[in-house]
Amino acid sequence: MRILVTGAAGFIASHLCEKLADLGHEVLGVDNFNDYYNPELKKLNADDLAKKGIKIFNLDLNADLSEVFEKPYDYIYHLAAQPGISSDTTLEEYVNNNIYATQNLLEAVLKYNLGLKSFINIATSSVYGVEATVDEEIPAKPVSFYGTTKLAAEQLVLGLQRLGKLKACSIRLYSVYGPRERPEKLYTKLIENLYNDKPFPLFEGSVKHERSFTYVGDIVDGLVAIIGKEDAVNGEIINLGTDEVNTTQDGINAVEQIMNKKLIIDNKPPRKGDQQRTEAVIDKARKLLNYEPKVTLKKGLEEQVKWYK
Image (cartoon, rainbow, N blue to C red; front, side, top):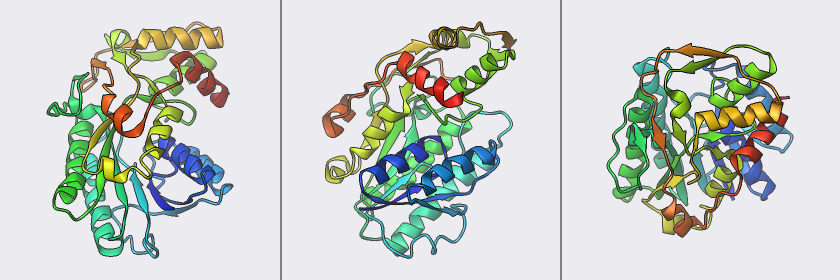
């Protein structure tokens, strides 16, 4: 199969590209290597992908995409997005990178790639709002620019599916961690600060936050499982995560144990837009994709610490 992955040099997408290539697929990527975090980290990921013969177009999804679509694809995995809930990121950036970029990609698909087997949109549990503990039938109630614009992007994709113009599904991910995790995310930052004996900024109340921390390898297995099941998942929204729930304090304790060090805490005021609790309801993923997360938080964090070192 010929497969396009957007945001290919990023955390989750780079793992997905590698897995697809290992399965024998022809994989191409697109990434704009923006400076939301250090582009050098993305270039390291891209170098790893190049060793597997994966070409990445250095291109913004808001640009002319005709070069990317010189030949048709069987599947497109759309992971590129403006991530996070940072107060430093403006609404305009979220709209440009999550809504307009998705629409421009969809227009290119309709223009150049009508034979696509499936457009797989990667969404987020943040669309559910403060409590992400429900199944896919419950109405979304986002409380952040990130969640709101990712929900809009999801509906752009599914709107075309409902009109019969595209086969598509949307996958809502839960608190993904593991090797290559972005530097501002919880566990990479936690490991870095422990490793360098630096104070860790901890937002008030966050140690009690409950999360379905999901290992990146489990997520990738779920995404790859869509291939060949595109008719079964067409038009579906599917939660992908783990139903094992841990608090942020559980995560801190695990990393301290793995690294045999004690974290220095720098207490901060509460952060606007933070989810209080997530618990992935994955019955649909189990039914449609035979999905079953396997990696425990402790095992996954051991792999992430090994990668960081």
